[in-house]
View 1 (cartoon, rainbow, N blue to C red):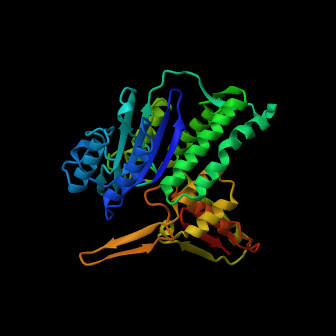
View 2 (cartoon, one colour):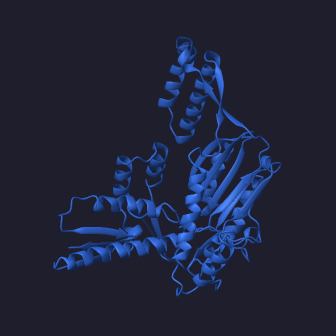
View 3 (cartoon, one colour):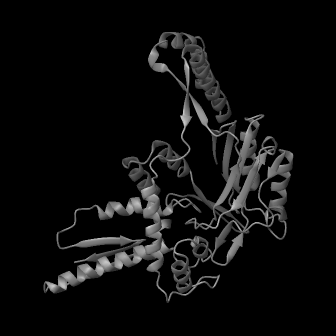
Amino acid sequence: MVALKIQTSSFPIAIISAYSSPEQNVHTTLQEIQEIISSLPEEKIIIGAELNGHNTLWGYRSNDNRGKDILDFILANNLNIINKPDALQTFQRNNCVGWRDLTLCSQSLIDSSINWEVLEEISLSDHISKETTIASTVANQFYKRYKTRHGNHLRFLNILGKEIYHLERKIKAARNSGELNNATIELQTLIIDACNKSFKIKKQLLITKPNWWTEQLEIHKKKEKSAVIEHLPSGKAPGVDGIDNLLIKIIHKRFNNKADLSSGVHQQPERPTAWLQRRQVTAINELLRKIKTARRDSKHVLVLSIDIKGAFDKLQHRAMLKILDASACPNNINRLFHSLLQNRKVTLMTSQVRVTKDQKQGCPQGACSGPALWNLVANEILNQVWPDNVHIQEFAHNFALVI
């Protein structure tokens, strides 16, 4: 369960992300969501949750008991279902498809123009990306900044000091997470109030477009896309839509980049993406180059290939967090992974017994962060000091050593 609040151009929105395993009692997760909603009266809320319940209102052909319980929760909290009943599936693993991902919003957001759709982009996960858009009529967005460098620090401390010791005792006396959360919110409110009374305020323009994306990068992107399409292997079997690589090449050549070919590739989940194919060709060519160079110099060559089976499932949480701590990963993302990987458990239920064990390895289930986490760990191997006569390279979860 993750909850955060963002400031839009018009109002703040609380965003809640939740997950309930099919083997878990869904009421446990619903109760946690209920506690957050109850602590945010009159707030505008968006909930994105994988609750593993079936209901025709969000895409399934039939209802199950779990789906009925979820619907009762939605109605009891006056929430609205943003999912469209006729939308594409939000989950796909091999031949298994489903509408597991549910997006809800509070009644106060209904007046806003909300658009929800399932994207055709490849998400690197068995969950398909969804996009929720809230229309805004404000062109320029600002956020508040206090001019703290211009003095008035003593006034700030005096205002804060009138209540700070009372709050300190309140925090120490907290007996549960609810009391601690209330004390934390009170402290935050107190600091903001002291800032408002002590410092001048300036409006900071929020830049919505990245300032590093230039026209040259856009041109380079189009050239890379063209190069990738040109190198697609023509004999590769097509995906489920029947469109093979040769057709994509013909269309691309005829319309000279005017046609958006991304949808054609995205509709073929069984085929690797074009950039992945290109990386694969590059990796093989580099390996062959090392072998040919050694043979040209009349040297014996030994090639050792290692395939890490179930690589993402075997990554140790401790190793991932250690490498994240040592990397340039932003602190907020680092803290998010620390929170995500702590106190994780795996539960196996049979007709006679329920067994629960601590989960200390494996990338977060269903997350697109798996490849990035694996690459961080794999870099530890690649960055080791190897003898001069050893070349090592990695592709996906395969290592090759040329000795």
